[in-house]
Length: 566
Image 1 (cartoon, one colour):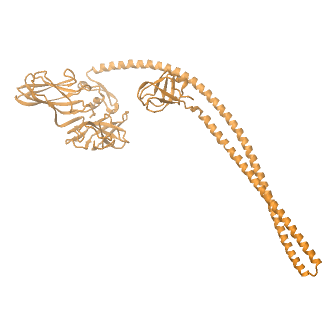
Image 2 (cartoon, rainbow, N blue to C red):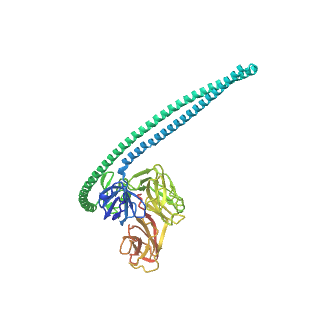
């Protein structure tokens, strides 16, 4: 049968549905045929179901790039002739015995002809022996007659007679031997004729069997033809049923569309209800299978709807919502040297598909970013990790808890490992990590890190300095800030921090310190939440109206918080 390739198709990565344009899938294609898209990937797909003339479903989702107007070819497999092919194979096996039987009959006939030739040769030898005996007998008679006529030669005659007698005896022995040869030849002839008769009988039986086999072949072929006709009839019935199924599916799709519209309405109503609930003094959340109210203070958190944030605050049970968390995390990297050792009181690991494993009583676990991988206790790549932010992940293979370093948001697991949990993030220079220590979700630097000096400009309100964050990772949710500046007079030293894409937007925080002794350097300390999106920069300015002098003031970062649920 010819390949079908009319029109074009639209393909979506990860989906099994194939949408056609200018196609007739319902009459030209059937389940089990092979679908070959012209997408350059050289991957064949088996068709599981034909839903309409413009759509069919693949047995497994499409793995290539999403595209429209793609050329294709559908290769028919004709799987419904499998039974007929098996019957034809049986016929060939049955018919293969006929040539062997004919060959056996021909061999028996040849054997019989050889035996007959041996018998003829034996009979010729017997007749030759008989003729020799007659010659010797005539010679003996002539010798006896000579003895009676010549008395004077009696001695000679007697000698001749004795010689004749001996010759007669020899002739007699030859005759006896010839007779034995003739008898043996006769027996051989009889045996050969019997063998020939038996071989002929076998040949006749083989011919009869061949005739019977031919009859059976004919009958089987007729049965196979009947089966094929039956298959064709069933195929037509299946085609009719498929058309009916398409009509039913179209009706079901219409019903599903109506259900989807109702579900969207219900979702909208649910969103409105959630907004109303969040407006209350407490937030209702689910924990341990019951509804709890967390109180007014927790309702004021800056990211109350983030699942990992809620889990880290204890608002929801992390296992119940399929999150990976780490509690009691501790790691010291005060010198920045590797490998790094960490421990925790509890680790909740995920498989990435919702399967959760909780591990407790955890000892020290060590991992080295210089060890090529993917390997437990090393990194998840064969090549070296580039300088930048790298992440520590706990990993689990069903029996052993280990760790692995990765620069990716999801680690590449070593063979045999199925679950992982995010631990913490540090900066990697290519040889050492940043000097810090980890406690829970907080990463504390071993001494504050400078983001830069403001300079000697005037300290009037509104003269802000912009410093792009480079000391905290992109996934950090909060950071601790400190400004080291000069207090020129007594009073309340006040600074305004802004974190966001510009001075006019982002998260804003005021930090104050009461100055009792003027003309000295002071540190104004505070912390601020980092926005989840946008270009993140730090702006700070003096809003204390003359208490502080901005000349030479420096911005420092002392810690940052990571979303590990700890």
